[in-house]
Length: 332
Length: 291
Image (cartoon, rainbow over all chains, first blue to last red; front, side, top):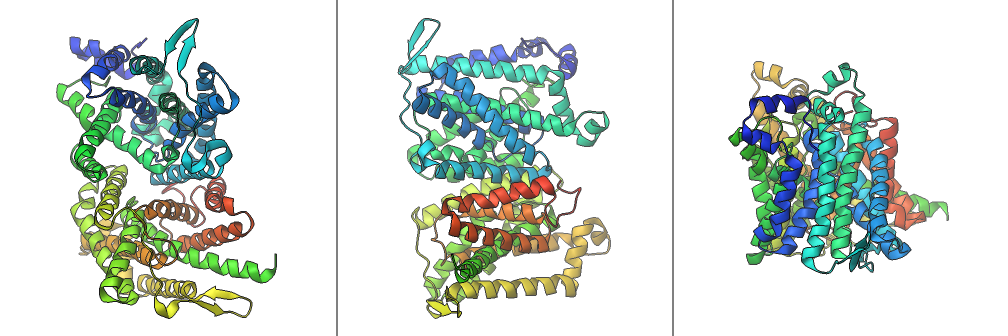
């Protein structure tokens, strides 16, 4: 499942038993997620960590591994959720078909936004992705007959999940968690495959030195567009999970504040590491949960903590931990 | 649809564009000199509007608010540069962007704590209430004032940059900060001043926009996206670009609002996408730096 390649092979030969264990990053991550509902104060929190973890993981492909700071990931998170809801509620598509359809359509959206935005570099890219994602927000706001406009999308409750004759009561929180975890596991396997592939090495080469990657003969523009689409696809799966979980899609999901939240999560956890996005999502959501108990102004503290992270802990919680433990280049 | 209506709408677009120009100018000047994109620019625009409102009610005159808010918030901007952003020079170009994004969270929530989450009406100064007969139609006095004031500010900025010694230092500092330091110019002081100027312009935009929009803690988020669109179309770092693109965006929004109101917020993004496909560096941008 996680066949080591390139940089990881080097890490493997130099690291200890711990390093070899951490090479099984997908299995380890799934194991942690499987016990998460019993580690966190509430199951609602665990489901959110799962969903946002997948969204942020997809984003990490773009930001952490390719070095492209997009401020528009909410467009794909939201698209996944809206397409799932519209497919189920409006067209009566069963859930197991609605999810792949939604991911496919969201990937198409990512292709459209990617074609325009990957033509730009650096700070320009951040600004353009933010603006184009806001365009998606306003389109969803205006097309209220499809999206419910300001009130969000409603009326597509999934109460039973059945596949291959197996029927599960989806309203039970534990069942729901493990069904959604299957999606997360699939996304993690997919992401790990991408990172272990030669293409994974190419995007990291682009991050380290774009000019050199181009000089080596790689088509930088095409690789950026592909990674933009893959990243959008994985994040949109998180959106599908959210739609199935909430049975509504709030319009705010498309706002650039959501994109910003995704950026915050990846930084809190640690960009460029496999499990960092889940740590970041958990850290953010726990902070929100804890602080909002005693003040409605939790954003003040989250903002301040984020600023401190940028200044003093740019590698995030998980990234710093990995560095401290001396876990080599595999970065689980 | 008669011609005079279109001309009036065009004028409305110029007034709308004038605020965009001032706001985007702050963003683009800071980028041109410091290489930093300020993601808190929208939040500072919003704070400027609140500061203008507060100072106007404190002194009993809109004019004091208009004068003092940009200076005060500009000073606050200098503090931000000195305390926070200065630490990030030499690190990844993404870091100041991330930091200012976190800062915008703090600023927006801070305003919610002090002034509450609901919108507050910003009264038009009594001298500028009402409309003026332009022969072909009636136009709000306040909007004419906004156009005139922005024109004056642009002229003063341009003269300062092109004709004074300070302007020379600033322009040279943007091109090669190291040489400027060798020549004995304290480039750190130039940077802090430029950042203060950029933030001050955002605050001025906020005060000017106040009577035209309602003032609320979220008003900055739309403004940030608008300012980004304008700077991307004009070319990041280009002052002429910001002016041309700002007016272009303002006019397109106004004209589209006349024919298809539901498309008004969408048109500027479409405009940006088209410009990017044809000229990724923006209309007046220099190729290589950003695209």
